Image (cartoon, rainbow over the protein chains, first blue to last red):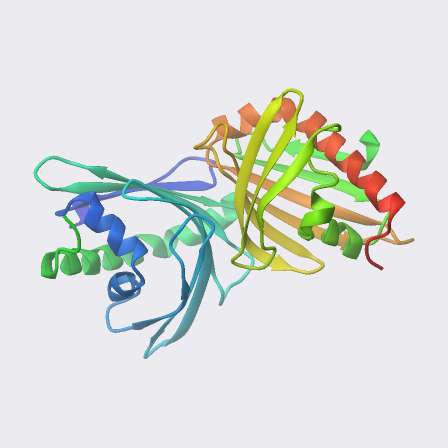
Length: 160
Length: 160
């Protein structure tokens, strides 16, 4: 699946751009990001459980969840700055176990031929240092999440 | 008042850092940012009127307002990613008249000796281009807003 996904860390920038293709239309991929029950099924490492504390996927809403597994508990929260189905999601994100390093994320959902789609993502960090600290673990975590999302989209097409 | 305020655009970065001192404790300056009635009295060019459409200054809340004057109407909205009185405010910001260029803003409120305080601000843009487009008009707009805030703090100390 690695060829479906690209990650670009611009030189001297505090942003990371990524792209990931899916074997489903963007409407389904978007819904998997904005329906709390669906999001919980693919977010986090395999074998963990995601519990929603809050989730209001509309412009001005916010979200908060805990991921728990054998290795511990990890909490996250953020705000939905813009929710425009099925094409655009602008949100903030913070890992509460290491507070003080929130990020700003823009996801653009693009339909491709043959019922496929692509997410073009931009993660903006408060500093280059924050960006570089994230880079190490980002690839594997993102790949695992999106592989879980592939499986979800395959099992149950969530929107046409 | 210009000596009270600094703006730094880091070379090759997509952020702007600024600092501004006030003749009031941080609790009052923070309240002027999170009380909708107070915020409306100093935000926008002199002679304009700010109308709140929504304002919920808590972590996970959001805000939306319109500034109207002889020259027209300007709409803005954003989310409160973190509200920690009286020291830290993390929020998103978008000018709706030119959508698609949201920013992410971290304000840190610091007490200084003699009842004074300082805001250390960081505005992070989605790209260097967005940052540079903002730089031209930012200084004068920020100065005018903060001079209005100086007057408000002088007229009615809003918190001790």
